Amino acid sequence: MPTRSGYDAVIVGGGHNGLVAAAYLAQAGRSVLVLERLGRTGGAAVSTQTFSGVQARLSRYSYLVSLLPHKIIDELGLRFAVRRRRISSYTPTVRGGRPTGLLVDAGDPTRTAAAFHQLTGSEREFEAWQRFYAMTGAVAERVFPSLTEPLPTRAELRRRVADPAAWEALFERPLGESVERHFTDDLVRGVVLTDALIGTFTHAHDPSLRQNRCFLYHVIGGGTGDWDVPVGGMGALTDALADAARAAGAQILTGCEVTAVATDGTAAEVTYRSGDEEHRVGARQVLCNAAPQTLARLLGERPDPAAAPEGSQLKVNMLLRRLPRLRDTSVDPREAFAGTFHVAESYRELESAYRQAADGRVPVAAPSEIYCHSLTDPSILGPELAARGYQTLTLFGLHLPARLFTAGGTDTGDAVRQAALQAVLGPLDALLAEPLADCLALDDQGRPCIEAKSPLDLERELGLPGGNIFHRDLSFPFRDGTDGDNHGDSHGGDHGGDRGGSAADRWGVATAHPNVLLCGAGATRGGGVSGIPGHNAAMAVLGR
Ligand SMILES: Cc1cc2nc3c(=O)[nH]c(=O)nc-3n(C[C@H](O)[C@H](O)[C@H](O)COP(=O)(O)OP(=O)(O)OC[C@H]3O[C@@H](n4cnc5c(N)ncnc54)[C@H](O)[C@@H]3O)c2cc1C
Image 1 (cartoon, rainbow, N blue to C red):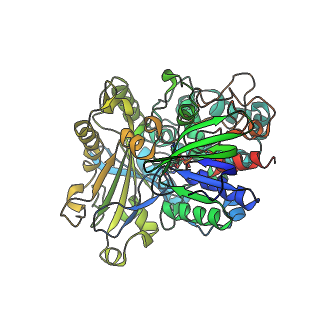
Image 2: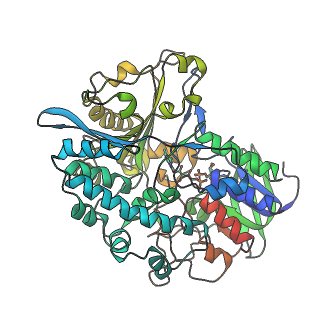
Image 3: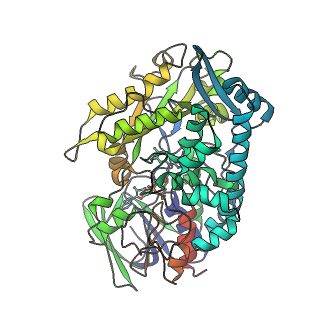
C-alpha cells in the first residue's frame, strides 16, 4: 500500500525509464510512487529464467546496450557495467558457389579490410565503409550529448552537427540514397541498412524517413554507436535502478495497474487496481512510463486509430548445448556469434522481405540478427551449464509486422507464429553445417529450449501497443516548430511538436496537460534501453 495519500510524483509504470525518473526525483528529495502493472519492474529490460528447470537467466526482450549515457550511471551511482564485443558483426553468404562471409572485427581493422577484400574483390567497399562510419561517428559525437540536454531546435542541432552533407544524408533524405551512393555491394549495403529496420516496418526509400530515425538511434549511442553487452543480463540494469530508486526513498508497488489519470492541470488523481481492489492516490505531477497510446486511454482520450503504433519483429530466445558449426569453415563460430550475425540481410533480401510482408504475407526468408550473450558474459549461466559449454542465443527477426499475426483484430495464434519462426530459422539453417535443432538444449520436461515472441505477445505481456518496441515510431532528437510533431503520429495528449516554453516542452516530455509528462520510450528522444526520457522527465519536473 502507498504510505501517503498524495505524492509529488506518481509514475505510471516501473520500466527502466520509470525507475530512472523515480531515482532522480527521490534523490532530489521529492516524494515518489511508482505503480507497475506487472509483478516485477523493468518492462522490456529484464532477465528471466526462461526455460523450466534450466539455470540460465536470459535477457528475454532487450539484450544490448548502446544508448544509456555514462552520466546516468554515474549520477545515480548504479552498480552496473557493460562489456565491449570484440566482433562487431559477421554476415555469412555464398559467393561463386562457395560459403563465405564478412567478418567485421572492431579490434582489428587490417583483418576487417582483408575480409572486405576477399568478399568484394577490391579495397573500394572497405574504404566506403570507413568514410560512411566516420561520418556517422562524427554525428554521434555531437548529437549523443545533446540527448540529455534541453531539446534543441532543428536549426540548433543542424548547427551542432556542422556537416551539411551528413545532415542531408541522415536527417533530410531517405537513407537508401546515401547507402546506394556509398556502397555498391549488395551484402554490404544490407548490413548497413539493417540498423534502420530494427523493430520498424519500413524500407530504404520511405519518404516519411522512419528508417532514418531508427538508423540514427542505432549509430549514435555513447557517441560511438557501439552496442555493448550488459554484464549479468539486462535485468542487472533494472535491478540496479530499482535499488537506487528505493535507496533514495521512492516507493515502488508492483501488481498495480493504473486504470485512469484525471488532472486539472495542477493536481492529478491516479486510479489503480491491485488484485480486486481499486485505489486512488493524489499527485502533483504524473509521469507516464507507459506508451503514449496507453496514456491517452488512461486520460479518457480517443487516440487516432490510423496512427496506432505497430511493432515489426519476432524475438526468439534459445539455449544451446553447443554453438552450431558453420558452412563457412574459415570462421570460428565463437567469433561469428559473438557479434551481430546477420541472416538474409542483403539489400535485395531486405527489400524483398519488406514487399512480401507489406502484401500481407510472412516473408519466405525473414531477415534476422543473432547474437550470443554468454560468449562475452557467461555470468548469466549457472556454473554447471557454463562448465558444460552451453551458450545462449538471441534472434531478432525483421519485417514481421503485427498485422501478419492478426485476422480481423484477433490473434491468429500458433499457426502464423510457427510460420514466422520457420521463416527466420530456415535461412539460418541454410548457413549452418548442422541443423540448429540438433544443438538446442532441453528443459526439465525434455522440451527444446526455444521460445518466440511476436508483436502480439509483446503487447499482451508488456503492454507495448501493437508490440512496438519503442512505444511508437522513433523521433528525430530536435523540436520542430514548423513541421509539428516529428514522431509522425499523435497520441497521449501530445503537444504537437514540443513548441511551447514550459520545462516539459524544453525537455521533450510534454503532453497537452501541464502536470502530466512522458518519461518512457514514447517521449521525444525515447526508445531503446537508455534511461534518457526518464532522466529528461525528471529534469523537467525539477525545473532544470
Ligand atoms: C524484444 C525486444 C528487444 C529489444 N531489444 C533492444 C536492445 O537490444 N537494446 C535496446 O536498447 N532496446 C531494445 N528494445 C527496446 C527497449 O527495450 C525499449 O524501448 C525500452 O525497454 C523501453 O523502456 P521503457 O522503460 O520506456 O518502457 P517499458 O520497458 O515498455 O516499460 C513500461 C512499463 O510500464 C508498465 N505499464 C504499462 N501500462 C501500465 C499501467 N496502465 N499501469 C501500470 N504500469 C503500466 C509496463 O508493464 C512496463 O513495465 C527491445 C525491445 C523489445 C520488446
